[in-house]
Length: 325
Image (tube, rainbow, N blue to C red; front, side, top):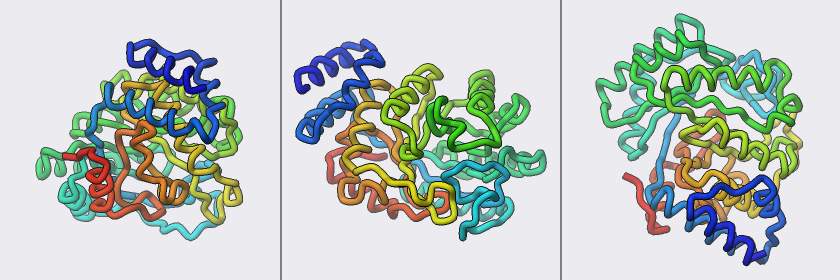
């Protein structure tokens, strides 16, 4: 197996794509060979992404009461959770969060709202807030994650200074109907096409641990490769009481790390950002995400769960000989 990993790494380093069959063979990497896989994934990261670790902070600008029934989501109105429910917050609150992110040396700041799509009034407010952030904090790159978009809404966001839009596909097409019934995989793809047409950068990934098979995770990686996103956020399920997946069994930490490494082999030049659930699932092995090939993280708190303090993430990056601006 080690010889195969080494040969596959050389193939990627020489800018050749690996095949679906080759990627699936990496799933057979034993515990003894896991570190060998990580070292080679790290070599690929260093060549294509360097040692800079991108850091993005988010703000939950509108929480809960979502009409969609995504099985993992604490904000779905179909679930009985203890999540806070509130409408779009005031501009001052989001500006304060943006300033805090900049002080903690985050490179990006993302405005996130719950719900299938923003109303016209919400969109106008968010565009106004985005313009204020761009004016007040010009060095901070600005993202948004507001649900589905049409061309008109996407253009409005871009004109307001939004550079990148997050719209996760969540899981493989073959598994999607197991985790959501109120909209389809194809519905989500429509927004990806809108982003391409309007020239917004695309941030799209998903969640490991939704009951999908290992081969479906590989299927998902190759589909992501086909849509060519700028950033691929990877989350790990943090089962929330009251959701349909509250009793879902989570993988071992090393199994999640192996999947990060395989994604780096498949997607060598893409920004791979490790997001929600990393503290819960990886525990003391959290810093190994970078050895396994990741080059970006979501820092601070998540939408409904706690994350690391941004300065803790900075120290982790520094201790590994990596850097953040």
